[in-house]
Amino acid sequence: MTRMAAVEQNGMGDAAMARARKTEDVVVGDEIVRERLSARLVHWSVALTFFICLFTGLPIWTPYLGFLASLFGGLHVCRVLHPWAGVAFAAASLLMFAQWASQMLLTRADREFITPRGMLKYFQYRNEDADIGKYNGGQKMLFWAAALGALGLLLSGIVMWLPQPVFGQWLRQVSYILHDTAFSLFFAMIIGHIYLGTAAEPGTFRSIVRGTVTKSWARLHHPRWYRDVTGEQPRS
Amino acid sequence: MSYQDALEVRQSSASAWGSKTELRNLKVVSKLIDTSTCIGCKACEVACQEWNDLHIVPTTQTGTYQTMPSLDANYWNLIQFREREIGPDFAWLLRKDGCMHCGDPGCLKACPAPGAIVQYQNGIVDVNPDNCIGCKMCETGCPFDIPRYSDQTGKMAKCTLCVDRGQVGLEPACVKSCPTGCLEFGDKTDLVARANIRVEQLRQNGFPQAALYDPPGVGGTTVITVLAHGDHPEWYGLPKDPHVPDGVRFWKNIARPLGALAIAGAFFSMVGHYLSFGPKKPKEGAETPKGEERG
Image (cartoon, rainbow over all chains, first blue to last red):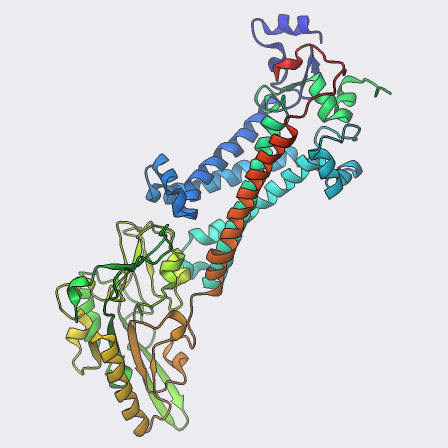
């Protein structure tokens, strides 16, 4: 569809965003639709519940971050909110898993990407010729790690939630260690995720807000996906 | 003994300044339980319920003289009845179950709420309900299975060693009510000396294994127990070598700092990456379609 045609169809609205409500991987003018509305909603419900869990959990994690409890009305409120926010986070994560799992299977190029050498090339911006599809190997690993982390946090959280006689002292000790470790790694990973999605790679954040990216962004970061969507041949 | 200082805090849970807040070196109190002279009359249970105004909760008959199957948020002091054949003899092993007020309290170590569990200068470990958030982590920290969660209050409860009575120079309610004198309250040094005399008596009267239970693994306990079969504290339901559970120590001392390091590491590597590489951009001279700058 041409840009003009899309504008006509959508009246005063944004043509690309209109297409991004239900479709993905289509070109609209200078943009390519990357994430449809439902995908973006699921992503942001995971993010929102994650941050509620994070900010209600951090003051319980260490007294140095006790001031965060004031955001919710005190540590007592955090203690009540945290497990329920955790259930919401697990539910949102399940939706996200169902939505993206099939697109996150690793290809041979992805396996190359996630080797230490591949990651170094990626972070040094030296991977321009890489055979990268809609999601790169790092994004796919983030997806699987997030799914595994959410599962670990949910299971250990349930054990911590119920009184000791239900699961016993040994399992509760294991759960504290697991919950703590899973949280730390998850948060460290999310810091990287937010950095790469905003400051490090300009033009990425709009893909999860507007749902669209520019053609040049797609060619730079996801060359194989760009060729698949536009039908362009790689330039020699 | 100097009871005026009963409420000066020695250690507090989730304190940002380590956990020790000790300034002065004050005397440590103690409660001595001589299980060999306990007759299982349960006067101490009644006194505890009455003084602390605890509601009586329905019990379950388990085929013994024991009042309750185990401690409860509404029942902080329980005489446990155990029957045991020891060689040709039959023994009725009675033990007063309740908070031991450890020198190194696992509950306090595990507690994430600042000031919810405190250890006073005199050795008493107390739950402060105002600060308790009812997360139940202290249950896991306790090597003696003492703290109980109350569904009514959403908080933890356990023996306070009658800290409110101690403050005004009175002995705990259980000690006050004991008819045989098997409970005593006072300065710990004095009571350990008395307990050792009693242990010696028992040793000379057919209980060569008699011992004082004041386990060093938890920094000694404020509540010390004379056991006729001191080589087998587990016969009385007491752990042989109690200490703060390894999992809780690993969690607080190793897993948590390493986790914090991972988070800080991730943050500072990203900052460092941005400062050295900046944002990723298309190569110069690459074809730039319109709308490119909108990102």
